[in-house]
Length: 265
Image (tube, rainbow, N blue to C red; front, top):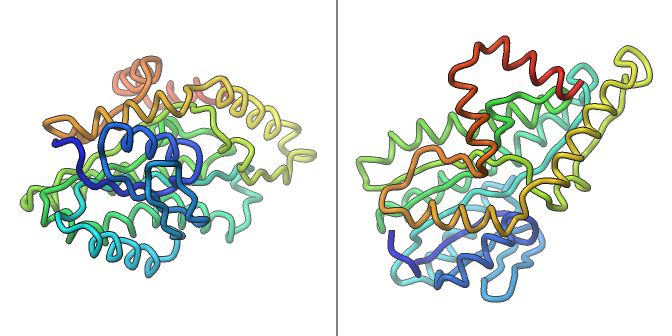
C-alpha cells in the first residue's frame, strides 16, 4: 500500500494508539487520532470521539472525509479497555461495557469507514489479542470480546473484498502500557470460594504485561503490516507469541486450556 495516505486511529491518546500515531506520522502518513479527550501526539490531528457512541464515530469520520479531498486510506480500530474478576461475580454493566469498547467500538469504526474505504480501495485493521486464542481465567470477558473482534474481521474481510477493501486483525501479546493500571479489577469472591486464585491470576497477568513489548515496537509492526502489498488477514506480533499461536493449531484444546490454567491459577 502507498505510504503517506490518510490514516484514522482510535484510542490514539495513549499506549499503543499513541505510539501508532507517532509512527505513522513519522513515516509520512496524515494521521487523525480519535480519543475521548481528543489528545493526540505531535504530528497527528486529534478529534474527540468516544468509540462507544456510534453517532460520534460516524460524525468523526464524516468530518475527516470533508477535510481530505483524496479520502481515507486506512483505519486502525485500536481503542480498548480491560476488566478482570470471576465471571460468577462480574456485574452485567461491566461485562456490557467491556464489549461496548472492545467489540462495538471496532464495529462502529469499521462500519462507518467502509463507504470511505470503498472510494480509495483502502484498508481496515483491528487490534485483537492473543487472549482471543488463549482465554485467560478471570479475564473471561476481555478474552471473549477480543475473540469476537477476530471473528468479526474475518467475516467483514469477505464482505468487502469485492470493493477492493482489505481487512485484517492483529494478535498482540503482552505490551507494557498504562492499560494495566487502568484495568477495572474486581476481587469479589476471592476471599471466599476462589480462595485467592483471582489475585494470584491477575498478579501474574500484570507482571507479564509490565515485562511485555514496548508500544513503539508494536507500532512499527502495525505500520509494516498496514503498508504490505497484500494485507494479511491475521498477524501475530512478537516472536514468542507466534510460537504460541502455532502451538494452538496443533495441540488439543483441552491441553491448551490445562496449560493456561496452570499458568494463571
